[in-house]
Image (spheres, rainbow, N blue to C red):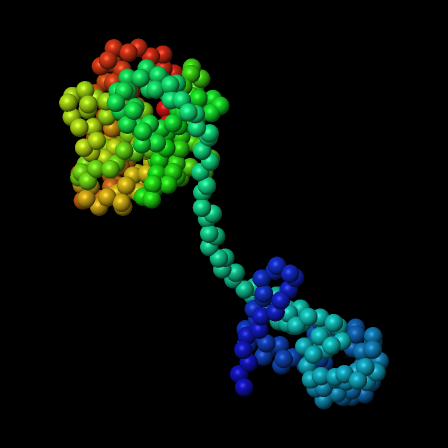
Length: 335
């Protein structure tokens, strides 16, 4: 009967070593006399031309390819049995001694893919008032009707206790999945709320339009919407999406991946065919634009449409409205 490979358990938590049937069979072919002559010659004691004993156990006799430990009433046919029964080796240890450690291969442990725990979005407490965030957005040129729309649709709210503005992104079931906060005072405090999933960044994308307009942050998105309203256009006619921060492509552009927020909208809205990139007029924004134009599939017409003036769309809006802002360099999160 053909022997099968053997897996034996080592220490708790260790992978089970695997010994092939061929190696096991080769180990069993080694008789005790041959083993002792090769590896433990000082242990071997010859008592007659064809009979031997061992220096440690004088009641253990070896003859005609067999061995018997008379005092313990145990015996065997090969060195493998001896190492296990007399020396107290484990099966694996015995095979390693006879065949070398290279013959005993550890099992290749295929780790089970870790299930990523679903992100739990932790939103700050909500203030009953929206005065501070309304004043802040209005100071940055955002149209009041657009501010009111965002508040009434729970896209933004004023947090407690610091009265930050919080921009919220939702999934298809209208569950909040992303939130970014931004101080409404002179402090440059900004960031993502714990548990935010950038696949669902701040967006106003309820339109069935073939057009998608992409921005680095929520403020730029709302600034663009305001310019559209100023020009008499329906600012909700097309899909407006923020990336929740600057997009950083790989050094080799072809190795870059599509930003999570953009990927989600394109999957949810297969009708989209035109993508307008309204990214910043700086080195990072230009690099991001070039990368997206290179990696997005050919079925999309990707149009570079940076703000006509200033670094970003809020700069352009403030310029049009004659608003002067003391703006320090700020990036990496929602501005």
